[in-house]
Length: 188
Length: 197
Image (cartoon, rainbow over all chains, first blue to last red; front, side):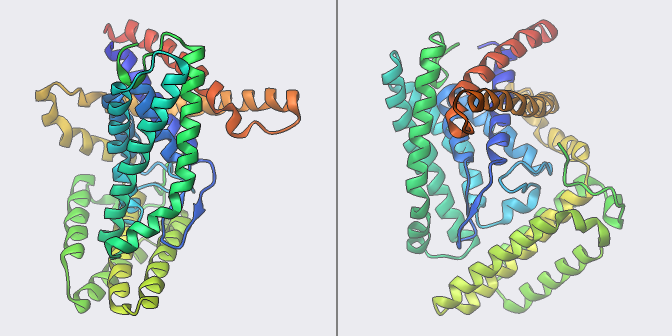
């Protein structure tokens, strides 16, 4: 893919993350909010692929670190990387990378196939990987045991499965509306 | 889109961004390595005093600060419920201190100055072919796309309301994504003319 196209798409998905962050969050007792931003991780991986998905999320986190209030609830700055949810934030770029990598391995020649692949890739990268980092963050930053953190993160799973389905729906529509789009970063 | 940076000048505004970043990174790491309660309490009090010394500059971060303290309180309450009040106190102190340092850095350092430090830190990656000098261009494009996203979202939502009488909500996410992907392609074509690649 040409450098300019890559640049535009990476910036676009970092912007999508910012927009999804403006939808109000729901706070849970663990100090970790339920937000729509994990949907952005899934979409970045499925639509951009591993490398550019990773870049988009790193760009988004760089903007947050620079002080832009782009996380749900208008949070931003270095302080958010010290909060109990920091593990989930760090897991986002890795989650997008894994989602993109899995998506590139699965079939996506038909809209239905692409949607099914997107659901599986999102569940693995956007859900499993992000939560694995989130649990590690809760253990390290909130001093919870692995079991407590694991059961704590389970609260998010039903919502995240809905996000996987939403991601699959978007991929299905994109596959129908833009038949030349190659998912998982294969080529545009 | 506004940054959390405060225009109300304080003594910390005068400290160079790179020095603040280094100092806060070392102090933040040290807090996570500290085990003694006394050392942690002293460190937390010092962070609190440093933050309080910023005075009115901290007003814009009130909401953020409240959410950090709420998270610390919830963690403390959770550990107390599990009969581990000391662990709860240590976690809450570490979290609050580290968050105060991070927020102080954000309030007193312009995004442009932090970006310069980031670009300098990342510059060794240029040797392996990564174009780190494009970080500021990408950030600018990201902010431009964010605005554009809102405009398109609003248009689609209005159209959906006219057709159905209800808000579009997540139903317009798919058409929004398609429209934005098309916009990104157009932006890429313009960039190609400008950058020549």
